[in-house]
Image (cartoon, rainbow, N blue to C red):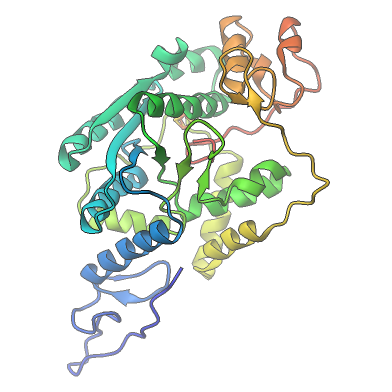
Length: 358
Ligand code: SF4
């Protein structure tokens, strides 16, 4: 990513000037570069960098239908706003849609969906909502009632991934754009290293994923800093929802997130450098990668006989929700016939929203 090279300079009257336009007074210190810039120049560089990412990585083609994963949070709200602005400004020729997932979390998702419904009107983008209740017969409230607050995000993350694909198919979109930002990606690189998850490590920095699956996904905010997204939403007075999920755990991902924030405080470039390191990893050819197939039960992509969602759902429907919790290796339809989970089935850490499973 290009970063603005101009140095701040003082005006004749002694006041500091924006280091880009050299005219207006700075309104903020840009988190990514620590430059003092005015609001107008901040909007311009923030949007232009995203435009460059889109163009250089050929994220979209003219005439494509693009679904924007919309949760009502800051990232997806800014994504919807910026994409619809850039689409008009640069004539991308895209048909944009909002796609939301209703996990059935009372007091959280019902409120955030109200925000998305307002965004639908504010930005003039058609909205489609798919719900866990309709797709799987369970809400997250019901799942948490059964399993408690451990592993709830594993269920939620797996179900959301499929729900987005199913919603995308209903909207007949060519691609999904998600609001994953640079902080999310740096955090996922670290987590995948800590977990030894080489398969995910090898693809978590890709700006477009799932090209061999039903709907490719792309991340136009791959190089956008979370702090800048928040500032942009704040200065533009965008309508977004900022409350955290009531079932959000504060586990492993939370520590990785804090670690990255500490690094960023000392050296803002650390976020981009972690992403760069993730991109430059070379996976040894001897590393066994999962083979992609389809779920025998529902036909969704899976490296096992049953996809993870079917395994989890089977556990829920049989009143044995722990059945599907653990590394997916070895969990297949033969094991599903046995009524007990094996002792080798390790518990994996819950993943919050923002995981690359989104
Ligand atoms: Fe689902 Fe995210 Fe809430 Fe976890 S934190 S239960 S993944 S909405």
